[in-house]
Length: 281
Image 1 (cartoon, one colour):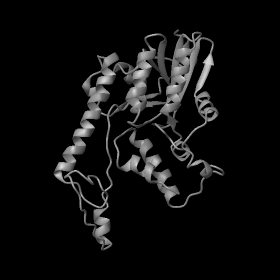
Image 2 (cartoon, one colour):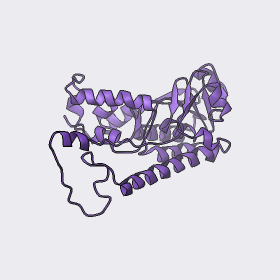
Image 3 (spheres, one colour):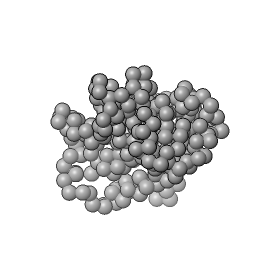
Image 4 (tube, helix red, strand yellow):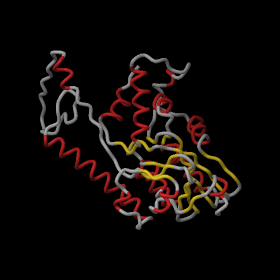
């Protein structure tokens, strides 16, 4: 079984993810790498990349719920794009390709006036999030688009929610975590203790930056820090585009519970449940 892509996502790429969720994902991945068993039948689908129209429709239908003139799009678990079956299972993830198709269906349905993003997510990868957020913002020009959470709406998930006209949450919901980080695994000491030395022959001073067998140079650290800074700036600008009163102090990677999220301007109203949010329209 190949785990390279998941390992790369967690240990080599920027993530917009709550720390507690990351720990769970690491445990799941490392357990599988150490031989934990997979659900029956799942392994056979790992190498299937091309989806049939029926398969795409089934996945989109799994997210999209229609209640009268309201389309509910469910965004649960980690957020990512172009997920394999294994990734979706391991991280209990939502593929942004499916969310984009659900948004398109809601946009083309003239009987739909309202679109609700029902979110329970700790966040995920950067890939695809700004583009889906733009689609949500575009949809708000023709329909009422709002988000609701009664659990978690953090990091990448909040980036999506911030593109909505309004955000509703319950009093115990966790909201925010506006920020990005990169966790690079340095195994150089372990390799040294094992008597292993890796020589790197490269062209370009930043080639092989972040490789596990070597400690970062100052130039490499500066490069990665600038990348993270750029993503963080983009994230905060996206939030402030519809919520200009959210302060820089609120966007330092922390999350807020219920009333605190309301006080910080991250949500527009506290409600008791999803039906109460829908009733606003």
